[in-house]
Length: 258
Image (cartoon, rainbow, N blue to C red; front, side, top):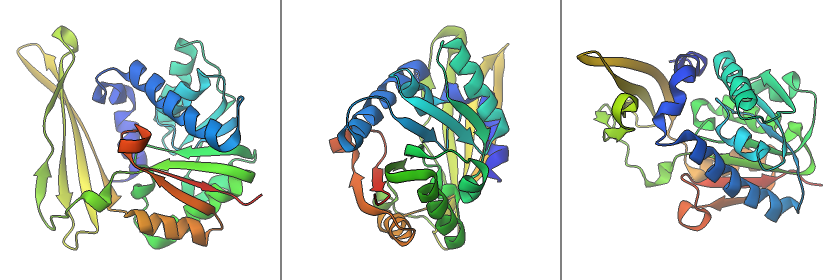
């Protein structure tokens, strides 16, 4: 259930959980670019994508001219992001394997903006881990810099302690590219966290090949994350909900004081 093992296992097939990964890169990049321009003004920015995965947001922003440094705790994901950047003819300003909990110790450069998208922060299960990550995220920002993070809408979820809950099966692609994508969630007894097993099934001969990986998440509420950010020295903490932002998850933005 270690997140590094989870993302290492998924790295080569992670794009398969999207109906069209290239289109998602472009769409998310455009939405995040809008937030950057609104908060920091026009023009390309120095951005750290600190949970880059295989490059969904990093490549989307790089395609719009931002200078993006991409890091992740998964070596396999970082290697895939580097290959995808080359394949798309995009330049990343740097790549590194780095952990949110020790980020500013591992990356010496400082940035105008930092991202942590795709529900990455809730992998930090303990208060001490969240506090450490919030401290390091602030430390990597230049004065006046902007944090953008996204998490699942845990405020809208009803925990089901001790229960195993499958998500709906999505059928994506056609012909040889057809696949079935779904998750199985197992809630902890106290309802504060849950284990996710991600499944990707693809046709193989007369049957199906199955890839799966498992990780645990904290059911992190918005006010909890806001408190950790404020305690770490961020200000102007704001939440942008999907119905207003157009993004698929709630977004939190926060500023390092100038």
